[in-house]
Length: 334
View 1 (cartoon, rainbow, N blue to C red):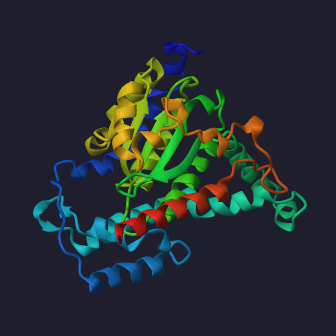
View 2 (tube, one colour):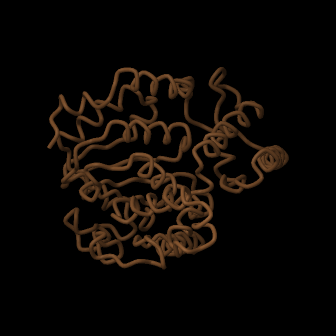
View 3 (cartoon, rainbow, N blue to C red):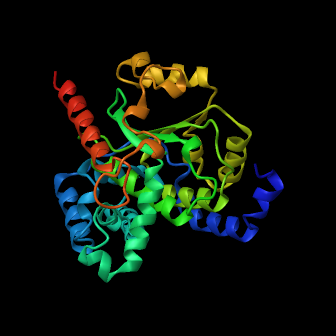
C-alpha cells in the first residue's frame, strides 16, 4: 500500500490551492441561518421559463421542489429577506453551466452507446466517443456505487463499496460515473424530496487518489449544491482520516458538517433509524441480513447487459429506485 509520503507527492500544492479557489465562491453563505420564505407560482414560472430558454435540453433536470428550495432561502447579504430572484437565477445558472461544461447531460447517452454493439453507426463513426463510453462502463462495472432504496424520509440512498474501487483508477471516467449515477438518483427522487443520503462501506479501501477526491469535491460543491443531506462512513480507517484531512480545509463549513465517520456498531444504530424497516434493511457488509451482492454483484460475477461492455445493471437500478420512490409516495398518502 502507498505510504503517506507517496500519496502526498501525488498531489501538488498548486492543485490544492486551485481547488480551494474554485470552491471559494461558495463560501459566501456560511453565516446564513436556516429557514425559508414564500415563492409565488408566478415567480416559479419565471424561473422555469428562463431555465428552459437558456438550457432547453437539460432544464427538466431541476425539479420544482429543488428550484423552490433554492429560491426560498434567506439572502446571504441580508438574512431577514428572501434571495432576490436575480440571485436565485444566478445560482441555478451556475449549476446548469457546470453541468454543460462537465458533459453531465450526455452521460446516459454514453451508457447506451457502451451497452450496444461496436458495429453501430455511432460507434464506428466516432471511435473516440466509443472509447469514452467504454471507459465509463468499465468504471460502473465494479458496482462500487449504486442507488438502493430510500430512507424513512424518502431520501434516495447512494451506497459506496470502497473495497471494490480500483487501485489505479481512470480518474476522468470515475468522476463521470459518479455524475451519471448521481443524476440518475436525483431524477428518481420522490415528489418533494430534493436531497439524498450516502452510506459508505469504507473497509478495505484502496490507496486514495487525491486528484479523484478533489474532483469529486468540486463536483459536489459546484454541480450538486444542497443535494447531499448526510454521508455516513464506516469503519474509520487511516485512509479515510487521510482523505478527510485533505478535503476538509477545502469544504464549505455547511458541507463539512454533513460527514459522519463512525465505527460499524455506531453506523448500524444510525441505519436502524434511517432505513424504512430498521434493522431488517441493514446490508450484510454492516452486519445485517440484506445481501446487496445478489442485486449488485462484483464484476467477476456480472454478465453483460447488452451487446457491449456494460455489466453493471444501471437500468435495473433505476427501475428499482423508481419503485421505491413510488412506494414511499403512496405511504405518505395513507
